[in-house]
Figure 1 (spheres, rainbow, N blue to C red):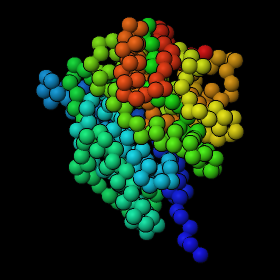
Figure 2 (figure 1 turned 180 degrees about the vertical axis):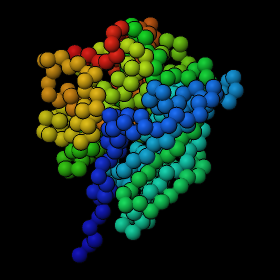
Figure 3 (figure 1 turned 90 degrees about the vertical axis):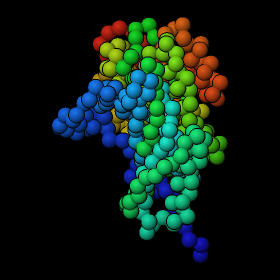
Figure 4 (figure 1 turned 30 degrees about the horizontal axis):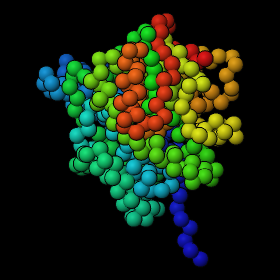
Length: 348
């Protein structure tokens, strides 16, 4: 009798960016942490929940440093490696930076997973780094109960082109680079409800490098950039609003969604992280009374390797959209705008 194939997603209690600690819990943890050294060269630290740390080394150069890792969101080991690596590098792009090199973070149940499977995970990560034109220059491995993979990603940016998540201005338009619904699709995958075409769409979006980042950084009309990951669109947009002291309006009908995302939500497929996200920050989101029940889930759906969220002047919208389209982001969409008022989100 043939040996049953091990499913990576069955070895972990959560997958992808849905593994993140809930925003409210994370805030409580960090609130008790002592203040550290904050030198003037540290341009971006923890103060605005930005995507990466940025440390200036001279007038034209600053180092961008970030780390991201998680448990499997898919069962194919090569795809898991690709998704995790793409997600980690995205934080460099979100700051307007160009990746330089990466370090691998590897935790694997070596007595449970075949070594060949572990090797394929690493190969997937290496393939994405080659596509980003960077080496994996080292890393660290441990024997762990659940499979974990990710990267420390190091990049560089001109401080004059640095894009934070806290520069949004009233009158700006909001642009989202990728479709939403990755968390919903991952929940359906665990229940064997994804067709081959659904799986392909999920992998395609989660392995698409957010390469427009450095080009967006050079546009004066681009005021804020972040990427949408485990806290969902609403969570990461709230960080933009709080850091910028502005209020956002999101047009729900304009949100780009994976083809079957709404269908899966209506069928009851969603991650536990979605509920934790809403519990953490739902009081900052005002939903129009006529919105369908799926809206709350899709706004809080944890995205793994999600799209860039851009706040830019109305005069820059055409140029921003063109940059995304030139880089192969066919689902880029204008989803709302920034206004004045108490930091928060109105979804209409």
